[in-house]
Image (cartoon, rainbow, N blue to C red; front, side, top):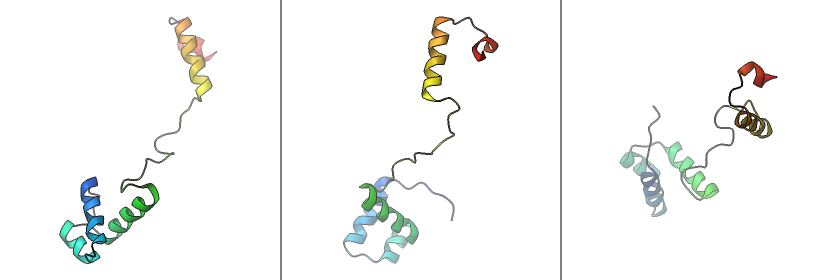
Length: 90
């Protein structure tokens, strides 16, 4: 199945239907979602208190410069904004 964005209110409605004893198959048919999606939303609700999990810590590309290096670079550029890249590297 192709990834499809499903809004938070639909996810909450699905969990509500399950809580009032609708059958999983019926909820899947009504909302057009898979059983595995329902199980994931339920697990997210139990673990995180929301059907939408928090963003991952390792999301995105890792930084090349650490915090100290970034601070030093910004300070250097503020003190001497006319420096060339080869001078900054040194």
